[in-house]
Length: 231
Image (cartoon, rainbow, N blue to C red; front, side):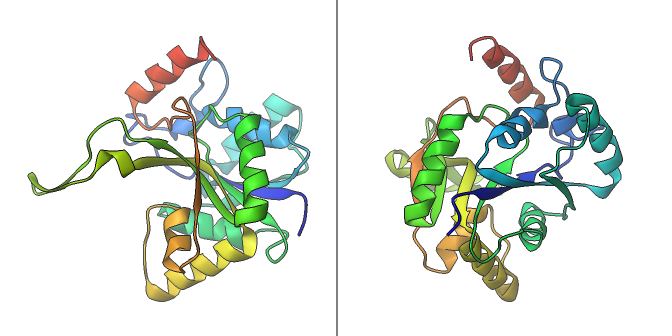
């Protein structure tokens, strides 16, 4: 196996829940686009051979121009992939563009999570070499209930409930196999770990960090602005 990895950087969402007409990842957080906080980390990491930035086709020209302004040119190890209508389809398209699908490792990360750090990358990369499927998660602070049509159907036991984050890291061949099985079964999951679980492969969880939030709403953005002052 290689001592390097590729990363699928997911940025093909919209600004609907954020309340913006533009994709939230291009919104500036302290004068930098949200996506650049994670993109720059992967570009600087010598172990990262290839960044597959999954975005909507109609946004590519504007994002390319933005990146050229940030870096002076388009980085050599950066590629663009057209996203799908759902997260699962976007990751699937990224997997088809991997340079080393049989012998490599792949990270999957939300471009809307700006507060990852090299320590997270280090821990995930060392773990994935052993366990082949690893993700970050934090213990849930609130009680989680299953609600349908306004009625509570189930209360989940909080001590065993964890909230999954990204990055997630996988042996490339394993994640590709999981996605092929999901497509064959016409199964639409929530995230990558769930699809790997479906093919009966264990997924290891490493404890993440509370500040590794995903900016989804305007409130999340306000929290991110506050966090920047303390990180």
